[in-house]
Image (cartoon, rainbow, N blue to C red; front, side, top):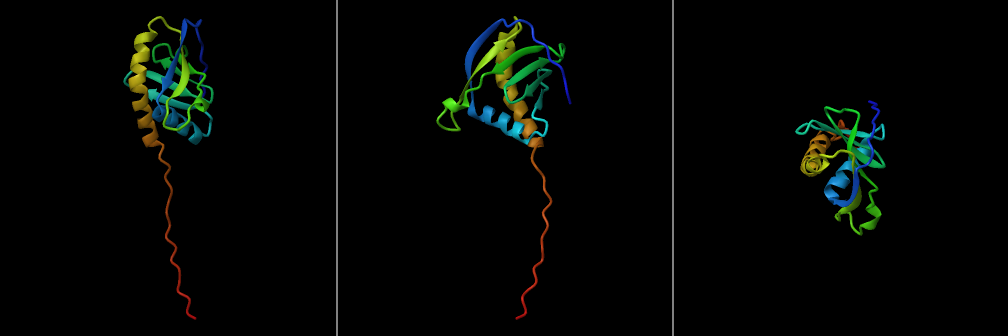
Length: 135
């Protein structure tokens, strides 16, 4: 799947931290992706999150190709343990983005968990019957 995204002028940028659970889950899904990008539907908000190596962007279902908010400049190297939160910057492209951001912080982790549950690798196990050595 390929989509073209557009951005309005940046309205504001704020430093935040993302929980380790959410950051690690997003990057685990990204590692499993063959295309180098992950599309996460946030059904409760009618939004689509797009995760790539550099950022996570959020697209509104009504303005499908326009980025509402982008989470950028993740700094996982600043943490000393995988369980520590990761600093990043939230870039707002919409005047209503404060309310959207509050909802995303609650809904995005749930959408990630739902997608990760579908991403469980399945493999077929075979039992090989070994014969006894008759020595």
